[in-house]
Amino acid sequence: MNKSNEIITKKRIFVLVSVILLTILYYFTCLYYERVDADTKNIVFFHWLFGPLFGGNPWIDFWQYIWQFFMAFLLFFIVPLCIINYYFKEPLKNYGIQWGDKKFNLIWTLIGIAILPAFFFLTDPELAHEYPLTKLVIGNVSLFIIFNLVYLVYYIGYEFIYRAYLQFGLKNSDSLSKTKYLVIISISTIITTIFHIGKPTTELIAAAAIGPLFGYLTLKGKSFIWPVLIFHYMIGIVSNITPLL
Image (tube, rainbow, N blue to C red):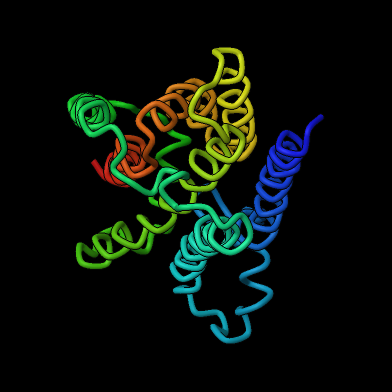
């Protein structure tokens, strides 16, 4: 193995290991929970850390998800960003922080918007119990809007680490064989599907089914901003609205 290939291999290993470690850290600080009832979960780490400050105040249920969103932004976006900028010393555009193939991305963004209304007809009792994550926003329009706006930082982190940092980090070249494309997208899909374990069955299946498409669109369009981030975020908002209808 020549020196150039050795550097590429080490980088790919670093990218994959860092994604796994950051996912594990996020799980124990933001996803590991105790079920209170069908509609309520307590994020264990958040309640251990901040529970005494709230003193039994029910609004802890709201703030634990705000914590979850911003931790995703920190661990999944800011940390990889620092790795790319200060360790890899590479342009951020190499990792999808650009508009990319504008025509391709615009077409698929419009396709995503066109099929979005279909998600309003998705009825699943599990999803209705799961979303919105905190039921305290129900009946409060202003709070509901704020909650959904903050929700965006979660999706920025999620899409960046799994679809941009991971895939472009493993790709490391403008020319890839179909086999390598398939391997990279498969790795991304496997990790994102595992990430959804514990979520409603419909959501878990959707993650496994849509993962390859989202992975392909990000690589092909050379952007994590659109169409995938925009479409995924809109699905999240619809998921919060549909149970209320």
